[in-house]
Image (cartoon, rainbow over the protein chains, first blue to last red):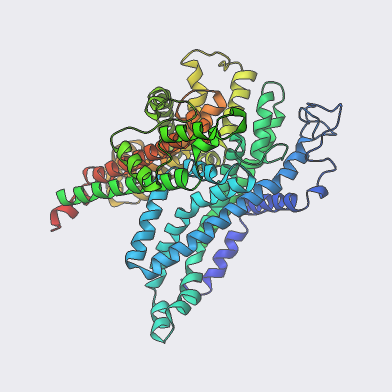
Length: 276
Length: 314
């Protein structure tokens, strides 16, 4: 491929309408998380008397719950909890996974074997079960759940990072960097690390969606944020008691989760296409 | 071939041993003492000597390395320890909870495979571009849906709106319909994705063109020539998917109030019943390892090209 073809291809990717929509969804969710007060006048945790279990209407777009809290406001304030958790989880997985993968792929030998066999073990345990084991260790809570989800994803990052490092290490420019007198650490930092990261970024975006799902699941099971936190999984768990009478309590938080996860997956897909 | 077989089995045993050790460290060494957590509470009014007696009954007063050796030996002989909350052996808990989950999981797995094959075949055979694009987008949608939310929505729509199946005191078969769908949908998504991709890859191979040139219909080529070859990549994710079935069972059984391994897992986490969770971790790792071993051994049987590796090798 000639040098001029690369930016052209990226440009074509950037104008895909589905991708633009996906970024828009993530942007809105981020704005909700950072400035929730700008999007709603209602509180995320305090209800209004006399407004209990109202169906969606002009005042309360997405209805109200059993103690008169606005459904839309709860979802907006909940974005902060779900997104912070997902960022924390991806951060933990990314940091630990990238370093372990870099170490395994660049040092090689028994270090590589030891690290990768350990990652195989972590991959052999279903991620929910691994998260639950870590939650027993850390205790129940919002941050604990996020860290547990993150730790459960370390092996995936490490495995991808290792294979990327092994691929990049064989490249001619890395040989050239070594040949022109670069030290091991310097070549690793300046050439191997940056060139291995594109695929890892794609996985990080995918894992962001997975983390939102996993954190919502832990919240639903009652191991995440405690009530009255408007965390999305917990919203669905609380709405479950009114499943026969108030469909809006479960339907809308679930849709929020689906949209954000779909968007994250779409963005991950686009990164995957840019990667070599 | 025999050498390969032995080394693969040894590897699998090693992974299992390591999974046991990781679970032991995570669940029994790091968090402190499950017996203390349960009996320490002042409401129970147990004296220090009574607690010491209970601790020695559960053998948690011994050094960790001794506990580890005993736990490993017991696990190898099939004794999985006591559930501290329920006061019965973990083996007994498994015996009562395994059959319902096994039934739900196998139904869910069959439905998931059916859904995935249906999506992949229809997407390949349909003459309509819009239908193909729609079907190819379905797996991406399925992976993005929280399992517990899907279950609740199904209860809401199918049971309360349409009144097709009851969720309040349903019949035995009726009660399995919605849980099976809930469990199957997220499992079918990665299956369908891999199947779609591998069918696309196989379609470009020469023998497909030959079959088409001989005058076979698209459906016949897909069924007789492509499907068999496209199955191979799907097998590689079988181990992961079986693990996901257990994870899905945790959520599905919670949503529908069913008994089984899933609700057992949830109870074990809520009450910090570590020996139960330890057994579940080892059990699911064992399933993963055995399935992957079986797939590895099955590969050369299904793909003759791989057999040569063993014939030519030393």
